Structures are given as C-alpha cells and as structure tokens.
Image 1: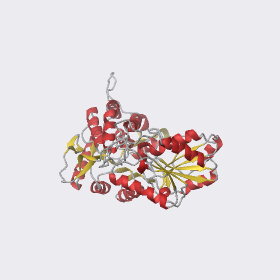
Image 2: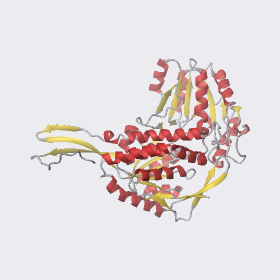
Image 3: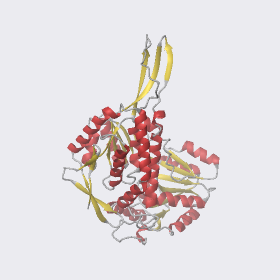
Image 4: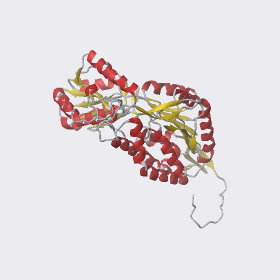
Length: 495
C-alpha cells in the first residue's frame, strides 16, 4: 500500500508520530494509501528548516528567483497529466476536470513569473534639498498554506507561486483526503532548482493545523475551507500575530431573468452545479428564476440531467463520486431534509445508475424545485451535487434574496439586458460576479475572494492583492552628500 510522507528540506521525510490517515479511492471505496500525520515536533522541524532557508532565499536576486519559477512552470506543464491522474485517484473528479484544475493553477505560476514587475516600488527624486524618497516591498518570512480537499493542486497554487517568487519560504498542510498531488509538485520544485527548505509539505490533521496557527516562526497563514473552520483559523492565527487570509464557504446564486437565453442558462446550471460533483466553493447551488420562466427552466435543466453519466472519473464519466463515504452520507441527508421541508424533488441522485463499483461514494445529480429561503437545503452550504431552484416575482426580489444570504463568494446573472447586468454587478453584495458566466473565477492577474462570511481577513488570493499579502511595504528617505564610485566592468551582469 502506498505510503505518503512529509516533504521537508527538499526530500521525503518519514513521519515519526505513529499516527497515519487512510487515503481512499472514491470510485471503488477502497483504501489506496496511508498518509503520515505530523506531531507538533515535526511541524516545528519544518518551520525551523523553512526559517533557515528564508535567510538565503529572501536575499536571492529577483532574476534568479524568476529563472527557477520559469523552470518550474515548464516542468509543471510537462507533468500536469500525471498530477491530474493523482487527483482523480484520490478525490474522484473526472480526469478532464482534474486537468483543468492543474491548468488554472498553472496560470498563477505564469503570473508569478512576472514578479520583477510586480515588486517594483515608486521613486520620488528631490522631495527636498538632496533628499529622495522611494518605496520597496520585502518578503514576510515563512508562509503557511492550509488547503482543502476539493482542489488539491489549484488552491495551493493560488498562494505558493506568489509567496515563493516574492522571496518567502512555504509550508503547506494539504488535505489528508488527497495528499499525493502536492508531493509530486514538491518534487518538481526540487527539479527546477529551488533550494532545499523553501517549499515544505507537512501532512496531518487538526494537530498540525493548530500548531501552524500558534507557531511564532510562521509569518502568514492562507486558508481555504468551510466558513466554520475559516473563522477558527482567522481568529487563532491573528491572535498569535500572523497575517491571515481565510477563504470560507459559499452559497452561490444564479439569477435568471425572463429575457435570458434559457438553453444557455440551463447548460450553465448543469455545468456549474454538478461539475466536480458540486464540491466547489464556486459551484452554483441556487438557481433563482424570475417568473414566469420557472417551469420552463426547471424542465430544461431536468432534461439535460438525464444525459449525465455518473461513474469512475477515469473511464469517461461526466461526474465522479464524492470524496469520502462520510461526506457522501452527509450530502445525501439533505435530500430527505428537503423533501420533509416541502421542496419538490425533481431528480433524486440516490436513484442514479452508476458506472462504477458499488462500494464507491456515489450520489448522482439532484434537483429540487419550489425551494424557499427557510429550508436547510438553501441556507446551508451542502457542497455536493444538489441544485435548488427558487422562484421570485422580480429582479428586485431576486437581488434581495442574494444580498440577504450570509455568504457572498460568487454569483451570476443570466440576461440579454445590458442595463440589468450593469445594475446587478453594482448592487449585488458578492465578491465575484459573472454576467452570463456561471463560475466567475478570476484569471490569475485579478484576485480571488468573496465578501461577508466567505472571507475572513482583508486580502484576496493571487493577483495584486496576493502580492501585497506576501510582502511588506517599506518607504526609504535618503540623502547622499557625496557620489560613490564603483569599479570598471564592461560586461553584462549575470544575476
């Protein structure tokens, strides 16, 4: 059986805590490996290694850091199919979706290759007699990343390319449910020439998380996960003096106006609701239909759902299993809750015929109609293939529904009215907005993050906000009374 160890100081590091976790193949229900769970002392060791590496890496020239980043980008692109296969094996999402995940993460690596431009400061000459003022940005230190199971490659890549390019060192605590992809990524960093200790992986559970949050040697914490844990991470990391960006949960709405192309809207609802089995923080889980289009839109969605094939993600299915049996059972429990509360169960995912082994963690696409705001299937983030349709009488009622929800991660409007779309983008209280785009995940040079209970901390991921998160600004005021002279060298500098 595969043994998955930590990665510290540029090499595999076998855990000594005596604790491990089971890693499953969700499509078969079988245990495929064991992953080490770190003790406090093993986290401390990783932090010590990362702090030592920071002293040299932070003073390495930007040119040299960029060269390594470009090499890593090349290796990642060459091996992305291998990484995607590891994701499918342990998470369950179909191979095409896993490959798309790696590709979107690669975009952030490419963004970080431009770090020389991103770290440029400002310069003002002669602000007073002989005095110049300029600004610089410097790395923080050891950056910790705690990532979720649903995107074991992409979410870490929202953070570590920018952190490393800016001169920080990194410790990642990936999800224990699908830990193998990040270890391969660590090996690619070493092959790219990254100095040992700059990129470290510590596997584990709450023990490792709590030690990261309290450790005085860690300067920042980046987290993505449920709102409950995001709030816990934010409060405990901030309490110990760390800079924190904690991205929490979501309940993403798709507002469909009567003038919308309903075929386009139905396709979008399917793609955004059931991709990756709904295990996305940007999944559309609530379709808000402005009457009188409700009946027709529900019929179009239900018709398309019949064409979906749910099964092993390695064998040509449209949707794979959920990540664990416990998670599958939790999501399935909402189906009974929805029926009990009065919603109409249009398509029951428990009745799906699955193209995979019976012991897999299966739940097919599920559709509810006539959902109301007081129902748990609407109020809660289910994080599974459950799509709810709510009906409203007007744009204003739909907007109020979205703005009154405690989550504010992503949303979308489907309409052919440019004025309505512009009004929506300005009035909706949500951090990421799509106009006829159901999953408005920003490209890497813009920043990712929500509002309200979907974000704790002020800084979003990647883009300009990501660069600012992993650096500190400094302003220098200088006066030089005499010019200084260097030696003669007619050659181009190399580094």
